[in-house]
Length: 237
Image 1 (cartoon, rainbow, N blue to C red):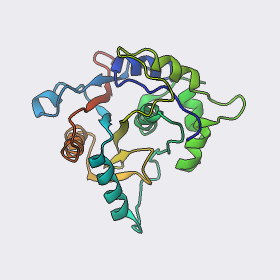
Image 2 (cartoon, rainbow, N blue to C red; image 1 turned 30 degrees about the vertical axis):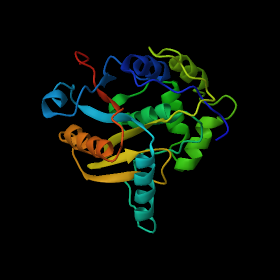
Image 3 (cartoon, helix red, strand yellow; image 1 turned 90 degrees about the vertical axis):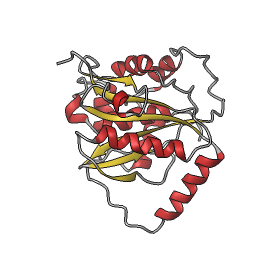
């Protein structure tokens, strides 16, 4: 990876300010904390819930699980919905922004981005691109094209914790869990392909995705996890 960014903090306030600048109407849909994966805590999450963005530590255990999964998927015919938005990560420390773009990009009809905004322009310009081409386009947009660098840099400075330098090799990584065509997908720009975690629906997505998060935790030797959700904004109409 050539270009490197300062990593984002998994903080709904920071992410909401960031996505509003990109063109999301946060009065209607926004990100909120997920305080736990038990049913009574999940019941506190506003509905509809469109996506989860999971932050987890990269450890030997998680890397071993990733390698095992990739070997199991080799040679398989991995069918994906035609409308699934997925992109590769080519920028260092950009996994937070990639996770947010995966969450937003798979629900464009519901979210309705602002006219002329980064999100509208980026989604239109990359609609016919491959995942690798989308990643390269984000890193090196054409002259006059949609540029996210300054918005990301500002958001990265807005967290409540100390901001690491762009050169830092953080051991934390963001992935997105969302749904398309009634299938639950894990979208990770480091992986070879989207990971299909089985059938779901708009109504059952949150509980189904929480199960996948619990599998992440079980496969790790750390409990330093954080989850935020993209949901309808309470009172947003």
